[in-house]
Amino acid sequence: MAELDDELLLCARYGELDELLAALDAGARVDHVDAGGSSALHMACANGHADVARALLARGAPFAPNASGNTPLHWAVQNEHEAVVELLLSTCDSALVLAQNRFGKSALTEAFGRGSAALLNRLLEHRSARALEPAGADEGAPADEGAPAVLEGEAPAQSDALLELPARLDARVALAFELGDADAAAAAGHPPARVTVRQLGGGGGEEGSGGAHRTLVTAASIVLAHWLADNRARFAGARAVELNAGCGLAGIALAACADCASVILTERFPSHAHPGPGARAHDENACSAFDNLARNVALNAVVAPRARAAPLDWTAPAAWRALRDDGGVSALLASDLLDPYAAAQAGGLEKTAQDATPALLLRAADSILKPGGALLYAGAGADALAREAVHDGAFAVAWHAPRDEAHRRRCCVVGEGGAEAFAALFARPLADRTLVVLELTKLERGGSSGWERLPGWARAAS
Image (cartoon, rainbow, N blue to C red; front, top):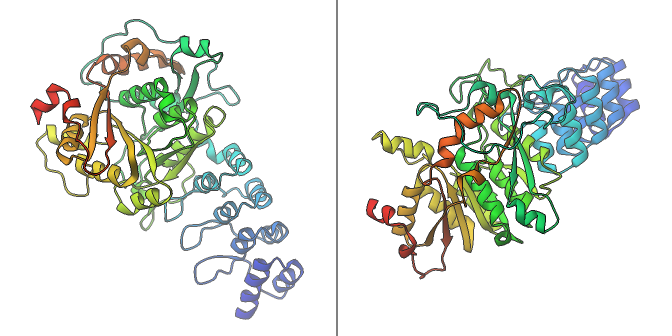
């Protein structure tokens, strides 16, 4: 029996259909797996043998993950076997495009990494990708159907305690931003770029506990996105990377507006990507922040074809080396990356070495950026980052404010009650003139630190 089982795996691997059927007829077990937990179905799918995979499924082969959490769909996508992917998605009820392996990668993640439009579109069309859709949206309706007019004028006042999106905007609303100067765009003969992003709603739970994650648009990311669009000419031919991109607004905005060589939007996989015993590692509704980011990149593929999503832990020096060795980066984007640090400092809490700190972000920027390249940062912790840069001496410091508050608030909101919720959340933060873009330009060794360019309030605070 053991010999027949091993023969079955070999036949599936090499696409020998007749021999595989003979082994099954002789008593080989269709659910037999090797030492790594991989089945004959894994082997056939990995090597593109659609006829063998079809025969195995007809004989009752289970669609199940191996010891590394990879399903046959993972392997088919990794090797870009479109016919096998179509077979699995159309015949296997348990084939879920968001199911993650032990490394936090889903089949959808793998498709983005391969850059195959056909594979990506097929996966996004599958029913199990609906966890990425706004809840309650009408199927088949265009994303901007019924969108209210662009927000203008004064918005209602909000409570100081309102620090995060209301639930109705969190899970059911797409935000569509018009970026760049409308008058300049009209003079150039083209409309302003429009970028649409969806947020990842969460059902609560601590990170790592298996609860859903929340990835929300922030006021800082809106400011950074508009500033990048207004300064698009600076980024012609640039290779840009956004760290912990969240919904990806800033990076997608840059890719949509500027003639960049490439824009890579990065996000770390959630810690619950490594499930413990009994965890529901293949929950159809589980959706990581990275999967949501990848979905937003796909939504904007027409207007931002040079953008792509990639998993990256920006706090790991190995990641810095990978970006540097791949040709270096001329623009590094981040918004609210230091928010936990700023909150802890305000509360008098101590941070540990592995937390996101201004010093760590500067080390990453110094390693990743080419000389003359710039880190562009908006949000909490910007003042501390500027002081650290002055102390470090490796960066020139400059501050940029968008033209006016009304320009920064230009946004269409899709969904019932979306306009009111958006105004309530973002009116005051976007009107705050201290919410600006910090630019840290990497100097050649021995250059000036740019201290004279640091605002007086930042110099005094240091």
